[in-house]
Length: 188
Image (cartoon, rainbow, N blue to C red):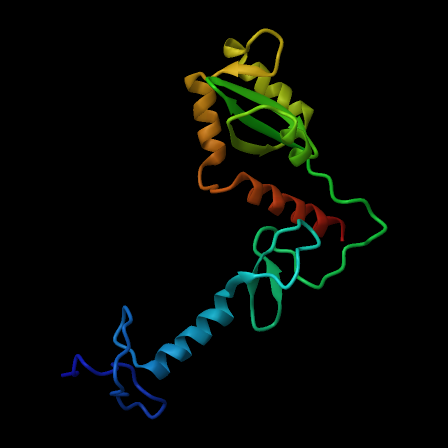
C-alpha cells in the first residue's frame, strides 16, 4: 500500500518515486509537478502579456508556447508580418447596445469609433454581419421597433436573441479581435 505522504508516480525504472508531496490536487512530488507543468505549458501554452501589441488586432494578451507566441484574442502568430501595403482587415459587425429599456441594432466596420459616438449604458453583443444582416434583424424584431429608427423596445424575443449571441462570450471586444485576426490571416 502506498504511503499517503509520498509521491505515487513511478520513475523511468518503474519503481515508485516516494518523494515528498507538494500541495497539489494529485499526490505528486516537486520533481513530477515540474515535469507535468512543463508538459502542460508545451501542450496548451501559457497565457501571458505579449512582448508587444498584436499586429493583427492590437490585443496585448498572448499564449506562449515553447516554439512561439500567438495572440490570445485572434490567434495571429506573433512575429508574422502583415502586408503593410494592405489596409487593415475589414470585418462588418452588427452591434446590440442597451440604453435604458431600449436596444439599438446597428452595423459598422469600425465599432470602436462608432460606439464612442453613441450614448449607451451597455454593449450587449456583436454579431458578424453587414447591412443585410442588420436589415434582417430589423425585420425580425419589427414588432418592437421604435418608429423607423434602429432602436427597439427590449422585448423578450430580442433579449433572447441577444443572450444567444452573447452565450459563452465574456467580452464582445475579444470576439471582434478574433474576427479581425481571422480576416488578416485569410488575406495573408
